[in-house]
Image (cartoon, rainbow, N blue to C red):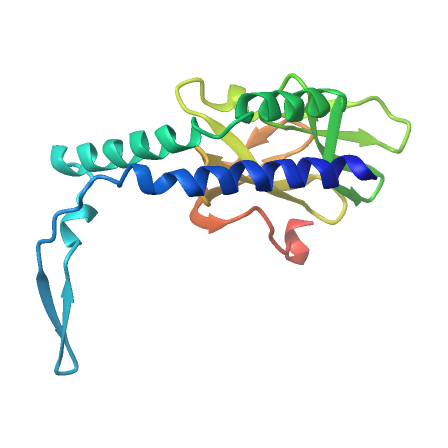
Length: 205
């Protein structure tokens, strides 16, 4: 039980050392361009409205400069790479991770992630001892984009399942429903939702 404590103390010491050095390099300056809006007779000044337009080269340059400055400070943390490698070694000891285990009727649904995978896949079994069936692989869903499963909700007896899909690590998901026996999605989808949790009505069970 001492290992997590030692790692936590080491990480705290490293971050503390980095913060002591942060005064040596100031972050890139941010230009102020006041924009005034009036709400209920009260004038509100926003000096950084110009940063909201991500299509402007100036804004992209600002974000890159801030990112470069942050990386410069993080790279100064003593023993940083050694600690990261230690975490990776410990994580590799766990060959598989399971999540979102749901029983519906005689079907067991779950998300499974191997140590070699960055994104988990959705599986199910018929009964506890039935063969494992790959139901959905988000990596193969669209080879031109990066998707992950944000959540899933099987219907009561397991013939259908709702799956939340996140693109590129965003918090907002696309919700789609699949027929389990055929592994086919219905054509419609619901956009801009959080997670993949739904409550199935009686006729969808």
